[in-house]
Amino acid sequence: MPEIQILPMNLSVRTRKGETLRDALYRAGVELESPCNGKGLCGKCLVCVEEPDNVPETPHKEITAEQAQQGIRLACQLVPASDMVVRVIGEYKKDEHRILEGDRDPTFSERDTGDAGVGRKHLSDTESLVKNTPAAVVKMSGGICRLQYAGQAQEELKNWPEKSVAKGLAIDLGTTTLVVTLIELPTGRELATTSSLNPQIRFGHDVISRIQKGSTPEGLAELSQCVRDGLNHLIDQACQDSGANPMEVLDVVLGGNTTMLQLAASIDPEPLGQVPFTVALQGGRAYPARQFGLEINPAARVYVPPIVHAYVGADISAGLLVSRRFFEPGGAMFFVDVGTNGEMGLSANSEYLMTSTAAGPAFEGMGISAGMRARIGAVEGVDTDGQDRLDIHTIGDAPPQGICGSGIIDITAALLKLGVIDASGRMRRPDDTNGLAGTIASRIIEINKSPAFRLGGKVYFTQEDVRQVQLAKSAIRAAMEILLHESGMEAGSLERIVLAGGFGYSLRAQNLEAIGMLPPDTADKVYFAGNTCRIGCARMLRNAGYRQYLEEKMQSVRHVSIETRPDFMDLYVESMEFPEIKE
Ligand code: FES
Image 1 (cartoon, rainbow, N blue to C red):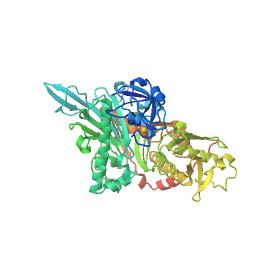
Image 2 (cartoon, rainbow, N blue to C red):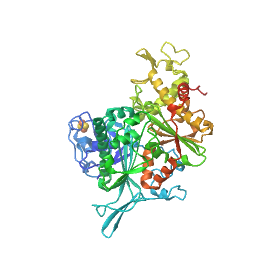
Image 3 (tube, protein in one colour):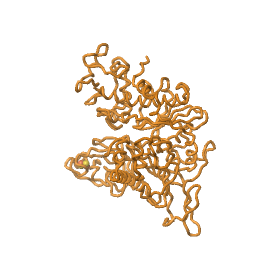
Image 4 (cartoon, rainbow, N blue to C red):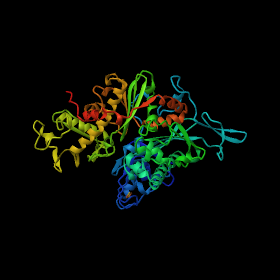
């Protein structure tokens, strides 16, 4: 299919059969303004094509003959027939989330990630801790096609077209997002990655609301079908993008939290939501594809990484593979997946502890009055000198539309430094601005009798937002402290803190320390790792040796129930305070 180069973003995308340019751009993360929704009426979805002689015109009253000659076209009326370069000239939104699809931050060093996302050649490194074992191999012998899964007997593979190449899927089944990566198994080459919001989101943003909904037979059937449809749609898209056939998919590694996995497998989630938090789906084993309703080759297996506890699922165990140093003897590191359910592991002197904590969705931009995902117009960074200067950065340098995760951390740290909020989290009121510079004081207003700080346009950071940040950061910090106490390790002895999750990529570790989410003097030990679940699943797909490695290592993990610890509440309340500002 034709390949489209998109300027000025320097992106590229392959179109699908019959797809308009507007829809292809949307998949690439460029959402053109389209008030008429692609009917060719509004004239807003304008692009300029290079070499216009080869591209049919798209007549519209707003496009003059001269403009048409220069290459101006309506993207919604153009179905590309050949490769082309287009420049977006109309209004558009750039969806960072869609573009990134969870790839890791490049600052996360190669030494840590090993082969993460860079292909098969690293799998056989002599340094590798894991024997290279292909997960699924197709062999022809005596005119019969046979399929062999690692460590298992061969079986006949029926209806396998002779020239097909075996494919696999690494799937991150998240509460908020679904990400599917298609990989060619013999080479380990990544063919396509597709992502979308989890369609179950309309039934509630968090795991608890999904458990409640899924605890009746009707609710379970609805949630199960909903996520299966979402996954099958993404699988279909990934196959279309790369010219593959879903029937070529023979192996899947499926990461996710226990609730998402059980709903996809159509297993009652109710026991996950009440003591003793029983998990019915076993991790560290493979299931037939039909168990999860995946429309791929019926002979395919779906491997679920090890599960430690109802709230320490296959997503974090897959993520741990991204930093294999976690399981190195004598290590001293934290791995923290900062999501609504903050899951974390501590590797301390060859002891491996894991727990989870209800952090809430504040760091994902939810539950915050002007919270939004990282896309055009989101406040993603705030700088201050602590006196009278406040620099606000938005994605795409667009007028502020809201605040994303990194902006939420930054503005909290900036307001602390400026003295707009105090250590208890109390925000100054408009009649209490003594000592503040005029440029800062003038931004403080009252909304519904409560103080709020104006960032720009209609975007405010309110007193209630500060409280939400306090709840989230104290839940994570208290859980980290519990694991440190449990291991007898001091925070000062930590060698590194790996942060995974949906924070966005412009987060500054020193501000996480400034608001007290991280222990003092640890900011320079922080590495951001992006979507570690997807990367870990891809690694297990390319090399089944990682499955065995992880299963063995996870046996030595000890789960710590923070809710049964008498000191948790004290630490939680203590961690609500913001630290003193360092000069
Ligand atoms: S979306 Fe309205 S003309 Fe293209």
